[in-house]
Image 1 (cartoon, rainbow, N blue to C red):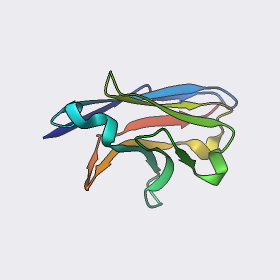
Image 2: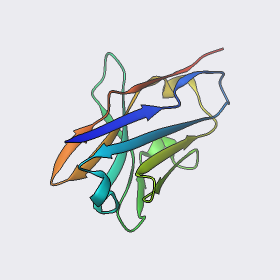
Image 3: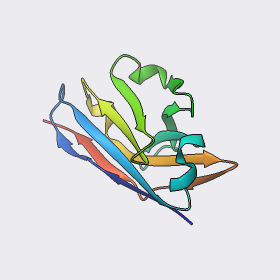
Image 4: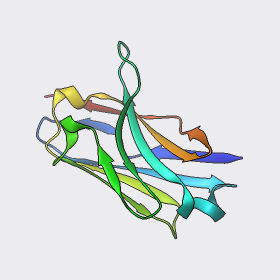
Length: 117
């Protein structure tokens, strides 16, 4: 069984920063370093979009609109993946979900990010 717990969301003003964390536990932890980890986001009127992924060798991929502003990273020893978000704008407001992929997908419960003045 895989558990993913996101944290770090909240309310931030435009131009601000947040750092999301996703801690893995359960059966994933021993093999965490082999998982492709990702962050997705979803608003009520849209589908869930890929924001960023990081592979087992550290290769990263980003949604075009967040390139240069967001950075995904991972700490395999801690079983944790991070998303550093800078220069946030209202368009980044969404529920952010952590994803773990290794043959199948596991999801966290999501954390709300609201960018508003």
